[in-house]
Image (cartoon, rainbow, N blue to C red; front, side, top):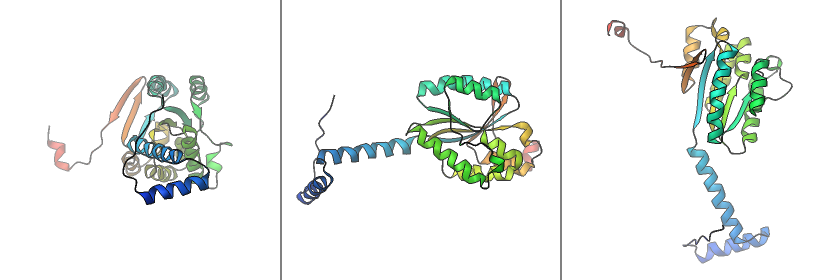
Length: 222
C-alpha cells in the first residue's frame, strides 16, 4: 500500500527549481523526490552491508563439496546471490550448477593465457557485481587458484587489488594446499594478511586459523 510522505522545509526557490526541472524532464516533483529517496536508501544499504574477504584452504573435492553443501542452505536463507568464479573440478562445477549457483566466469576461460590476467579477473568480479543486482553475494572464487598455479605473486597482486575494492557480501578465495606447498613463508603470511579470516578444511570439518606476530619470549611462556 502506498504511503504519503510529507517533506517540510522547502523554501520557494528550491520548490521553483524542482518545478522547472520536473517540467524539463517531463516528470512530476513527486517522482524526483521518490527517486532521490530510493537512491539514498540504496546507498545506505550498500554502505552498511558486510564486505568480507575470506581465505579457504582445502586439499580435495570431498572437503570443498561438504563445505558448499552447508553454505548453500545458509546463503539461500539469507537471500544472497550465490555464485562462483573460475572452473573448479568437473564434479564441483556440476554440484554448484545443480544447486543453482551462477557461474560468473568470463569465457573463454584460459587465465594463464590472458595478456592481462589482473584485468581479466577484475572484469569477472565486475560481471558478478552487476549480475547480483544490488544483492549481497556469496561467491566462491576458484579462479584465483588457477592463477596461483602459474604465479603466486600474480595471484597476490590480484588479491591486493580486490582487497581495496570489495564486492558487497562474502568473497571466499579458495586455494588447494598443493598450490601453496612450494611457496615461501613470507608469501603465505602475506596472503593470510590480505584476508579477514583464514579457514582450513579437513574432510567435513572447518578450522579457523589465528595468526599473530609474537616476540621470541613467547616460546617459553605457557
